[in-house]
Length: 147
Ligand SMILES: Cc1cc2nc3c(=O)[nH]c(=O)nc-3n(C[C@H](O)[C@H](O)[C@H](O)COP(=O)(O)O)c2cc1C
Image 1 (tube, rainbow, N blue to C red):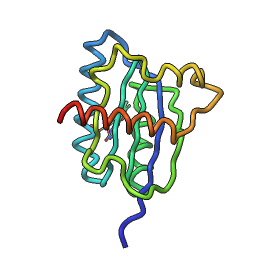
Image 2 (cartoon, protein in one colour):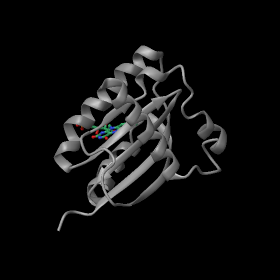
Image 3 (cartoon, rainbow, N blue to C red):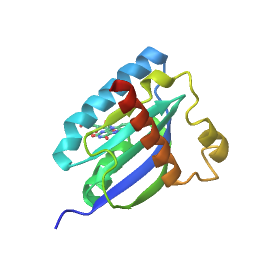
């Protein structure tokens, strides 16, 4: 029996102080840790950073997702973490990525503008499925761009 796969989707606010260079350095370190740690526990996923907002999808065995997310949640480099979805998934959306980083080339676009507006990051809730669709669409576009 293959393991049941769970997917967690959240977004959060950047708390890294400093300018774009400092932020880029910290994101590099986050990605390095992700790519070092995630393969050991069978986690795959994607991280998007845009205009001060992180969005991340984590997929893997339930316990593995919970364990890595516990650690991520306590990271002072972000805050106001809002989980939008945590449920069983028919299959992985990012099977080939220990942690994809998306949207690097899009700081000119306000990718999550409507999320910020819709939710104010506190009260209303955007659906997890919708955020996942946004992340998936960006991933497909970046893949096409790279091809
Ligand atoms: C937005 C965000 C996403 C992160 N995603 C991951 C991740 O997918 N995997 C991971 O191991 N650490 C991730 N981290 C980093 C963890 O919070 C933590 O710093 C790291 O796992 C520590 O790894 P180390 O003990 O190997 O240095 C993330 C941090 C932030 C702020």
